Length: 178
Image 1: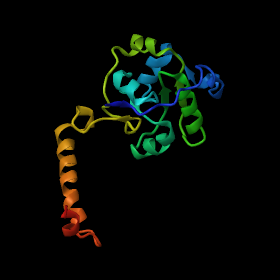
Image 2: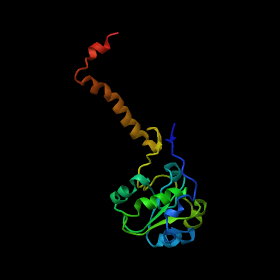
Image 3: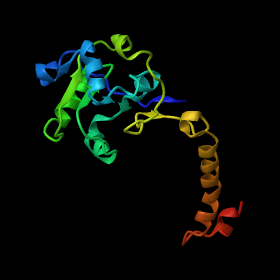
């Protein structure tokens, strides 16, 4: 089976809105200005939500590792945080606030309105900032790496016998007896 490992339910929408001051709130009508202004769009939705559809050019991020992933990717400048559940974006804002030197905005709009400004949503993990750690995929699936990942898994599995045979203290002649 593939799918979410078990995301924790987010608190009620709006409960953490007070974490974001009015001047850091972005409406869908202002989204186009942020796009033209060169802001980096970080989507803090679950990886399953991001995979199903996100604003073109947005990068998937996980809040707990966001600052490290932004720095690792060399991202600089203003950020727009968004998520299907706005609570995630509000908490992301607080996570970055004291560490990020440039403006941080949070998109305060229903995700159903995003395509009005950005056009059709993109699907997949292209350009993801963080790995989709909240999902597991079988190695044989396209998201699990497909044929190369399955081949690597089989090499690992069949190599275990040789590794175990060379392990000090294990006598395979004794183990082979019925």
